[in-house]
Length: 80
Image 1 (tube, rainbow, N blue to C red):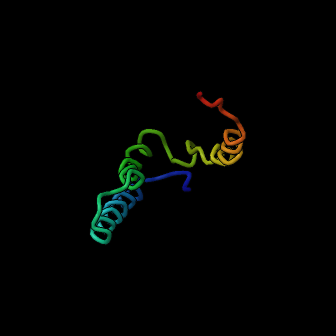
Image 2 (image 1 turned 90 degrees about the vertical axis):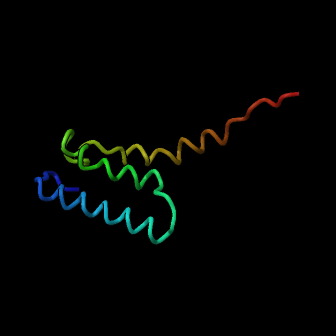
């Protein structure tokens, strides 16, 4: 949630992500999930676009439950 980043912070973030992913694979003896792989791109995104704080979509996630309830209430015609 930092508003600014310097190169040392991004380097440390990249190392932490690499360590996390390595340990995940070792611990669970599994491939990375997509959400873990996406972490590997965060540093390059921050370098190109600025801090993620300014481009995140969390506010839209709050509407997900409401929109999902609308779709459950819709009826679909049955096929005969």
